[in-house]
View 1 (spheres, rainbow, N blue to C red):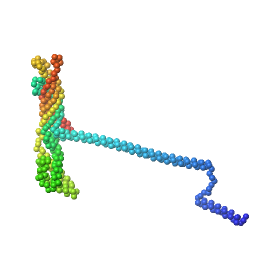
View 2 (cartoon, one colour):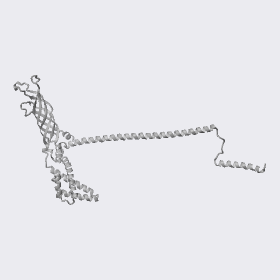
View 3 (cartoon, one colour):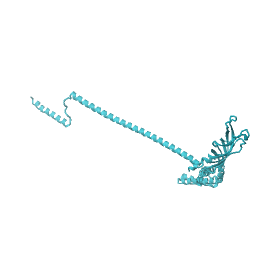
View 4 (cartoon, helix red, strand yellow):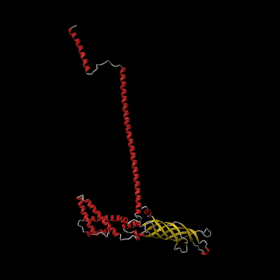
Length: 381
């Protein structure tokens, strides 16, 4: 062997040993022997199992997320239904409250005499019916009778009166105290005073320096308030100056508002004092119409035969009223006194084939004490 060849063998071995050490230090394992088909099949099965497990976990997570979303949607729907139900209940409560307030308002209207302030009222009376005029021998009621009678009453004294007077007299008629009567009237005069105030202000603002006497003349022509004078116009002018200053200085706004209220209240008081000259007593007198219920009483219903030959002349029969009417005096909401006449019909039926039944008109005198419709409101005060 050639010496050079001898030396090359150890060198190759050393080179291989160095390469192995270097690969070992680098963490690289030297290639082993090839894997068998069984090993490869096992590794493939493990990888597939891992993939299927990962897929199952992902599907489970997606299903849980979907269930969570469905639960959220269901919760939202339940909340929406609850909100709709709550809104419906709130609406029902509001409607019930509104109806209650409307009913209370109607009671308050009766309580404050709103019905009578129109000059109308009504009720049920306990009437005494007895012999009346105008029978001319046709028929007459021989014995008195007591009967119930619904009626309607009109009090013309309210018609054509200023609203403040109607409200005050109606409140008085309902038994209210002096303060309530005054408040009822002032509530009306205050509105009218506010309209007159605005009209004066419009004239003053449109024409600065306008003559107060001219404004008074125009206002009296439009509204016919005899109490409007130049002093009121001058006060409105002062208010207008404060209002102009309030545009530049907001602290003047309250002063302007207070001044306006003061003037309107002053005007309302003047309107009410002027109206109180009228009295309420004549508003308690009126007339009524009613319809008494049918009743039984002894009546005389003659035939064409002489009285001596008529044993059935006087007999207890049913009287059917057709209409009743007369004069009324209503001092308050509790009762009214009624007097007048009732026109009725009565039938005579002797059960005699030779004398058929026949009807006669009969007049009766009526005196009654009526309980007004407004008494219900007065009793619940």
